[in-house]
Length: 379
Image (cartoon, rainbow, N blue to C red; front, top):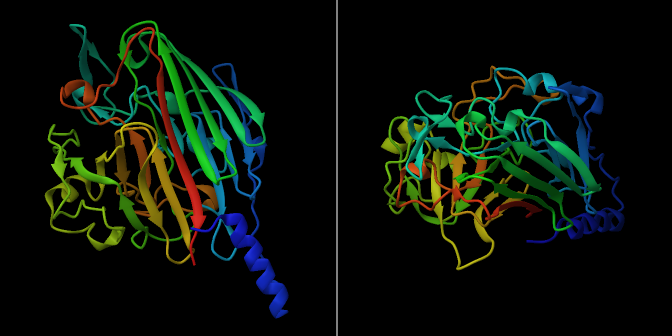
């Protein structure tokens, strides 16, 4: 894959040599910061802009630690916003919120029946997804105002203090997260956390991507590779059964790059339960460090996104519950299967599955998680 800056230079040289008129480029349209300036529970909300040396731009709000926009170039050098979101705080405060661009915790994904046991004590959490607990509860990390400090043009630091008993979780937890838009064209998301009591920690990032641009049609033509030999099948409530099932010879197999639409409507029980892909993949990991979780390519634009993480799992979701009733940026509806999520994390319902990697965090330990979304283009 060529680097974006090299592609831009090549494009400009081609125009000069041929003598053709330079085509009009699509320009980045920043959101008015005033649309985000308000107070919630006495804490100031704002919108922050990150830019790297190659021209990529992301706007992030400290309300829920949410990525609001992410502008990347296509194979012709035209920039488009490739994540779903809203033009103002009004959308994020509405009842239609589907975790767009959000930081999710204390526990990403689902915990069955909203219950778990630690050190012999049973804890009961908020149930906000039928009988289950989802994405940290009714007011998880996605719905709080984080303290923000912009370190430089490419880096934003967010911190939050989650009190003992918040959403039913034990322990006072201190969390720091950093967004960085690197010169390698990565949107890098890092998390650190400590606690004063034994508790759970499992965070994720929840951007909805369409690499052809916001509201540009379905993601059926996006070609996806997922670095996983197994996944965790779910029951009718989308809670894992506890089995680590091979993807081989099933529509869940993305070890070979495959268009999302190729098998999404197959007669397969797991696709019927999830109304499409909404499953945790057991990532193939090396002994240590950061591993490739997924790669996605959009043929028309030539945009490519690679996902790297230190996490053991990734939830792959294809926008199956979007129905067009929610109106986002540029007054465009969020329609059925018009976005993809790649949520790197530990497995759903891990506290209730002894064979799943542990999500327990003890006093004296530090939780660390990283996810990097790296962008490029191909011809």
